[in-house]
Image (cartoon, rainbow over all chains, first blue to last red; front, side):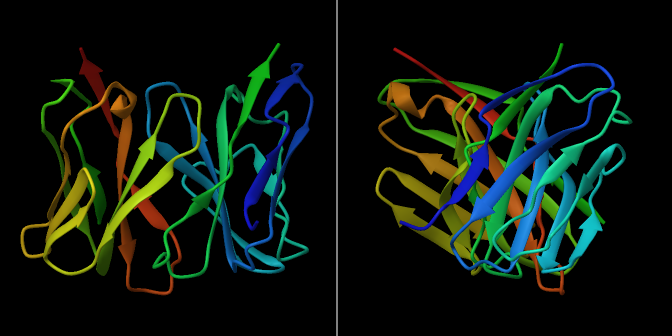
Length: 113
Length: 111
């Protein structure tokens, strides 16, 4: 079955540490996205990529970095520069131009300890 | 500009009908998506409207008026499991692949 997989489901980070969230899809989708969701709030776009080896900043890219070396993979690194990283992180993919909608991963809940 | 508005919260009774409204101001608007999200889980696709009118899919229906920048999601025969957040999202006709999301409407279904 095709799908999009995020790991880990729960992640704990110490102050000053970088952590990387994994996102892998086998849907052959061109575009991939990272969103952040805070309690009781909507989705805010961090980064997105429409094609391999290319990505663009979203609305809240500061303190985050990404790479897109393979079509299937779009990992997100939360750096120590992100001052308030505790949130629910969602990865999504789409066939292109948003017409097919998004397929979402199951999410990673990141907590700073 | 890009702006999508939805009510923050709604409450309804089991077995009843509820309508969740969404208004949008999106340049180059193409279509309108509705997603359901249970707490702590990923959003799941409910509907997609490109043309004006009502699309019915079981207990859920979605309506779009392009001229008014307005959509609604209609949930019939409400069940307790329908308690969730409902996200409205707009797609654009330009080269951008992004969806523009509203903040979501939290629906509480009471017995």
